Length: 511
Image 1: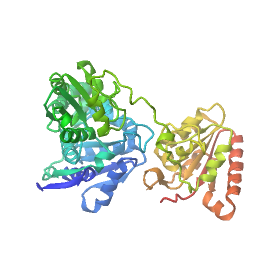
Image 2: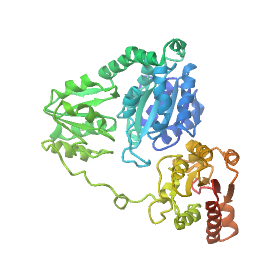
Image 3: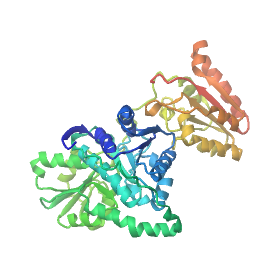
Image 4: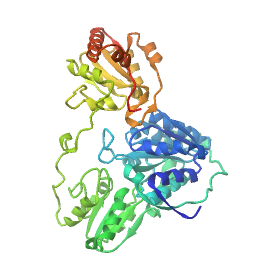
């Protein structure tokens, strides 16, 4: 068990979970967390844990909390935008307190490779007042997750471990520890109900938060090396990139480095002591200037806010450029804004069976709200099928805001995720909206996970519901005739008052 093992960051996370005796794993698919979930699914026969896919991050978090108060360590797997949905139970659980350890693996997506935004999960440490670990490689990931479960139980709060696609794919050695947590269950302490809500918050700041703060200031997961008058502060994968750059380039051999393993609570004393020993500092982090914003007042700090580093993803060239230009108070080399023409488009699959629908939508003179999923890829030209797309499950509520009866295009996964709430409100408010549900029975954008069929629940809410089977239509008549039939059906629903639904069925060819 104590031998060094060469592994990936993905495998290190799995092994740390096994060695932490995790009993319940809840997950919502999405890049880059689907790969982590896939590892647990493939190895399930070897483990003593339950794994379940969820359609809602809020439900995934609440189920983990239910396991926690019953004495089962739980792991929640979500991508960064999923943190927004589970924030409600997360923030309340901190002062409510928990039982056995709960850790959230938050999959961040610097450069928005497979996401609708580029938000930084480290900020949830500030909002929820929880610990946030930001590992830099396999060894760091393994140790962070092991410690995260321990500190979760010591403080009776959930803990966030931030991961990225590059962390999952990174390689290195880890030294596994022997299991030590199978024998005693940590249960929820019901004496908390003797306190008022304000009293629970007071107790948290008197007992739990000081432990979290001490952990951040003194953690062995943070590394520091003092070499010269220039220093770099980093966290996550950028820490590994900085280590490589400093070790391989003699030009930067005298640059100091503070690699933070815990970024929340923010270790002010640790960072301040590092800052005061250097004439100039560079902060290397992804995606937002989280660390930089905490310490700008301390001295000559360069990073994203000064233009020395780009927002989002970092590479060696970015950091090398920043070091070479520390004498400049502000640089503008990263001020250009990336366009689809420069990056290359990520269009809908050319053989997508929903193409007749998308071509039909393009010809309509009404506002169309899209949803996060495959359909959002039809917004840019040449299709131009939908006009907006704010969040997963948000199309129905968005379309209810249109002054005239418009259309909401939503996948069956998005509907089950949170769109059903928008549908309930639309019916209750008597909204004028046509909802087109793309029913392919899977979450196509995230790997083909199964989606619950809630068609009968929708029918109970909306009597004006029709079903159109594209696959059957294309088999029996020409594709142009399918478009005409869809256009006729949509036009009829748009003329009706109130809420209307068309289920458009077909099978995704990718799965």
